[in-house]
Image 1: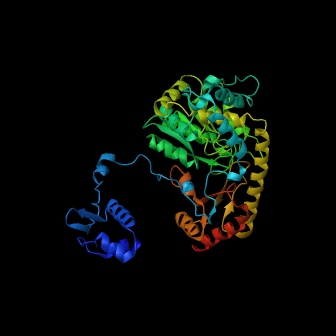
Image 2: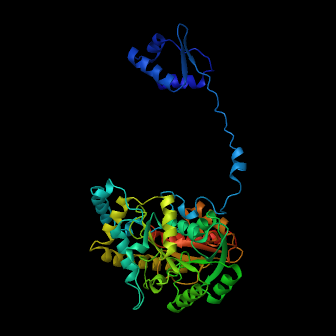
Image 3: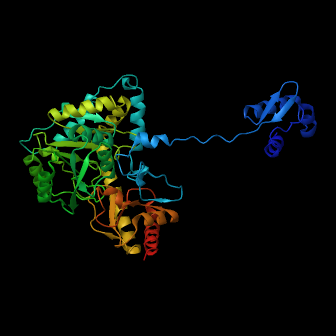
Length: 460
């Protein structure tokens, strides 16, 4: 009855619809077909029946625009200056080159291990029971053992009781910021640094105090000065393969920073997001060198196992551990036991270490391919250092470049990159963009490099 719907679409409101008999003659349809069609049109609100009179085209009124203006006063100013969705979380068109994401390509993940682990977890008791608030004891023990394995002689290793399982490192960071620092209090933070940490801290009402971080990490003297001037009691940092720069602190720099933190009776919030993403160097968590409770350590499995398994751990010792546990308990109560069981299954499989070795080789290859492509086709972008781990290249573009416009121009050409402005807790120290070398389609890296250069030339 498409013809009838077309007629109704052009008929004025109130026009009488032909009778069923007339419709049967006009469209050559049987009575049952016509009756069903009229029922469907009535259900769609296109016609209305008036008993004893006939059926008429319904006057369709435009829906009244809802007025949400009152919410402006009720909400007040937002806590965070960043957009709700980071540029790294944008969806890409099927034919676009995606260098903006913060995750490795699906081909690099242990897909068979993950699927098998999820299947086993779904058949276990974890599928029907509540997980302990602190997490599955076996998974707590695994995280504690992983950290303890790198502890030097004479340093007490963490125990399972020191571990809190959380739903991804972002959730853990937010809990730490709320429970350890608190609204209105200062937080020292590397600059540049992970955009999610900036967002989480701002949404928790913290006052951010940027600490410049160079090729070796933050300057210990600058850190000491900031502690003295602000009275801060916490410093957020990524000593291993930092996002976005890829910097790994030297052992000496790590000892110096930890000494400053201890001197001020403060906490180092160590985000070891890239622990499993080493390429040319081994991770060396600072938390393994601290048994005095100064380091609050976060490690996630999301990047190395699967983004569908939002499982991470916070390792903390002393009263601070209980504060974090209390915050997590009030926010999330507990993490899905199925996800925890599946994650534990994967990382305790005999093939896990083999997978990590293969992952390292594949990521190294992609990193070098992208560096070569940029070197050949993008003279306008400078790579200040080759990262020894992680997923990203941190590129400096010419002074005066409008980075936001560059990102839009590249997007219009089918290339997605991330603007460096999102990684600075204050004003950007220069024009940067971040590109992911572990994403899909490494064969298109030369094309991506040419598109990036075209975007830069638009502003020259």
